[in-house]
Structure formats: structure tokens, C-alpha cells
Image (cartoon, rainbow, N blue to C red; front, side):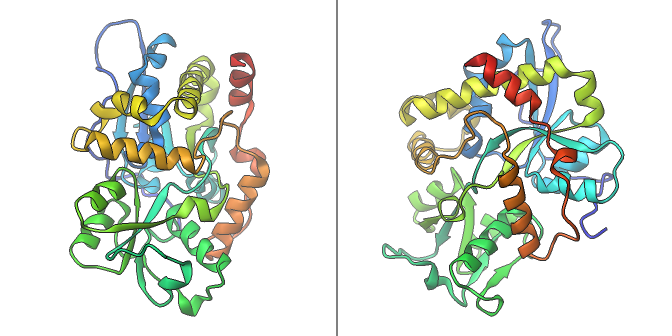
Length: 331
């Protein structure tokens, strides 16, 4: 299948432990592979910094997959317990006939977290300004690229108007942009703010604000793992739900002090700016439950991009029972 995932040889990037690993401290280690490391996912990092994971008896071992296909490959191979990426990865696997279907059991982000960066300042930017321009938008078939393409179509663009470059891997896009490829590039925070602060580019639009509510990134595990680790899954979500509440209610400056160690090469000001940007566009699901209508909208986006051979069954991919149970008890 065109979107089949290569389990062997999946590129797993640098280990980014949220907590120390391999110690006999009575905590249960959960291996999580994330699609990329971004302030967009602040609640997950806050859950560790604020001690919420430890309160649940958990220790998180975090790795960076550098793309949803690599994340899903890590989950399917058993290298990771939980994958953190777009639900489209689970859709492709389910449509491919997998027996132990990867299941979305918690949805963190509810819109695209990328920002459109231009080579020049465009204070009066309009979406029509990019007609005919080359844009680095991500891997073909990935949600970042498909959501961006959908936003363009919603703004009246036809296929002839759109010039998206799909040739550069997601984790290499910013380097390619800096070296001279394309007129625009979509970037997550804090990279976008860092680029702007360094005078390398200018943020002209929030893709998520234009794209509306889409189940963008969530927590996915094999059904067999969930069945054997229900308490761990609930504890994991409980810790993140507490952190979501904190991220929605606390000021960006305070949140930045808890995230600084997660982004050692990023300035405190850039982290603060990033948090404000994500708070402004209402980035996170308060209850971590994926609405079926949002799931269907995601499929509309994938279908519009010509990447969906048939529609997937919501009930076979999404299990909201964990998030619903934890959220109700936390209330």
C-alpha cells in the first residue's frame, strides 16, 4: 500500500528522556515516540516538569521519530509503547488490514500547530499572496502538508495555483529553507520564533487558525498494549490532562520557566512567544476526547489531498473511553 509503513530501518532520532531511565525507583517506564519536539506539545513536557507523571507512578522515556511514519513504525515494532503523532498514521495502518490496530486513546492538539514563514516581512499578508509561490509544507501524505493544502483550497486556490514542495523530509525542511529552497516554509514553534528573532524569516500566518479544528496529534498504542496496560494508559492521560489545564490557565512566562530545560538551545523569550502563540489559537483539547466530526473532517482533508483510498471506521481507530473516564473523574 502506498502509505505502508517501513518497520525495519525506521529512523529513530536522539533520545530525549523526560525523566531518568533504568533506575529501580518503583516507577513504571513508558516508552513514548513523538513526531517532533515542539512547544506545541507543551502539556506533555509540563506533565513531567510539574511532577504529574511521577504522581501517577510513571517515568517517561521519550524519543523523537522525526515524522509520523517513523513513529508508527516504532509502535508497530514494539520499540515504543505509545506513539504521539497524527491519527492519519493509524488510519493508513487500519486500511492496510492490520490485525492489532493502533488505537488513538487520547487527543492532545486540535488544530495545525505550524506557522507560515516568509523570507521577507509581509505585515499585510493575505493568503492570495502565495499564489504561484513555492512552499515547503512537509511530507506528502502527512497531516501538515495536507492541512496546508486544504487551507489553500478553502481560500479559493485551485490545483494549478498551488506549488507545494513535498521533496524535503519534515525534520529537514527548515535547513532546506535556510539554504535557499522555496519562498515560504511551514514551521512549528519554537523554530518559527527563533527564525524570526534571528532575522532569517518572518511569521506571516498561523496555519491552525486558518485550518479550523482538526485532530492533529494524539496518543496511539496497539490495542494489545492498551488491553494489558489500562491503568498505565489512564495514569498517563491523567497526568497530561492536569498539564493541559495548567497550560490553558497559567501565563506564558511562568509556563516557559518549566519548559526551558526541554529546549536548552532556545531562548526563554522565544519559548514564551511560542506559548502565547499556541494559547492564542486555542491549541489543546480540554478533555483529550476526539470528536467524531473532527475525525471525519480529517478524512475530508486527506481525501481532498488524494491520499485516502477509502474512508476509515472511527470506532475501529479511536477509543475515547480512557480520556472520558479520566476527565470526568478529574472534574
